[in-house]
Image (cartoon, rainbow, N blue to C red):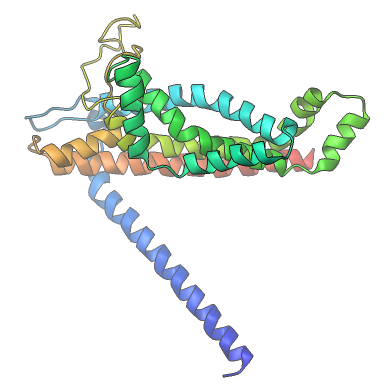
Length: 294
């Protein structure tokens, strides 16, 4: 077989493998949505869950997921941004920074269950936060921080060095060059990375089982006292998220309509993660187009 035939054969194999993988992913998503979308309604999205009765919803779990996501990004985004700016713009390239980057890569590859057990030992027991939103947010920060730092650092390093030299040549300090030139130019990549990280956090379950807990107390959304156990703003209350709720339904089996609730909750989770990815792509392209046209 000559080189052209081998080339065509290799290209055909690659196309076949790509189509096969896409079909598997599409079939999985289609099956989850086909089973779950018919279960979704306004009552399903707003009503609390019911353990031994038919007709429960996912309202509290859905709110807990978004609340935990907000707190986690509120903690991890500034830390990751500061660490990425230091590693990209200020740190000297030596063995110390090599060790730091290696540690970040190792931490980003840790299984989420390990992060959950660490959060359980440190935040739940040692710091005595108990099973709470705060414990879950801190555990998710550890889970999210390495990947988010690496993503932001890559976005900053993708900016050509000529722009840094131009800023310094105009008399700007290094900090002014970073804040006025580098960060605005890297904003599309940074924002895209943050939104994708948010989607990863939203679907996390293993780390939250041991930190945020597996219960969802009834909430009074008219109660804005953050110290009240029924207040949605209380960060010291246990908070079962949507992903944990799906795991709990299928492991305990105390819901008469458990398969239907699980299917609907899975569809909501998949739709939310897909929306995170689509929004990230849209905003990234929009900001990139605006930056290049300016």
